[in-house]
Image 1 (cartoon, rainbow, N blue to C red):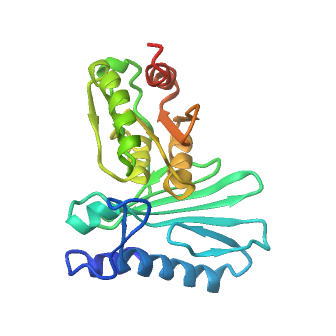
Image 2: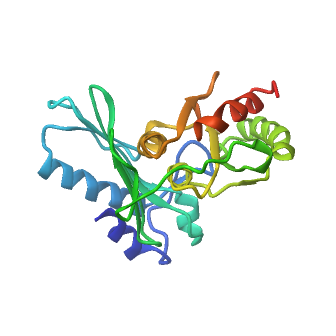
Length: 241
């Protein structure tokens, strides 16, 4: 439903454009319309569940369950027509993440899992790659919106780039995590993430046989890879390698 809303507006005139944290952090009517579509569906189908969504929709949980929603991860990409954006939806309960779905409307790809089950891409099981040699690994990252944060991230990038096969920057953390789960990337790290950026993708990685670790320090960040690669990636990110 949210994917249909976004596809209908994709490539058209940008409406309702506003800035959030900085001038490079936009939100548009497309983000809001997609969120409202998800919000209204959940209100009708799961009225007792809570909601936390990027563009401000929220509801208290009476059921002990909460949906965590990014209606459009990769807004800048979407506005530019760059084909890397998605919808991310996760369901939490008292044990943590129970369901994770990342939907890529342009490619008609749905990455989904439930806790304790296989991770699937369009119904077929997927797994993280078995790569354990960091120097041969393709890893992804993302950047914050503030110039000071970007300067710090550039320093980390300068340390990591010579030690890996290559680095990718798609601009949508949920999609990066889904691609780690599906074996399209060996690893991922990023700081400055909010729950809606990673909640679904983290479960995808874990149920695809991967591991996810929270980065020490602030702002909040994650690193994800297969268990045999994650320790080396974390060591490199910490500056100890």
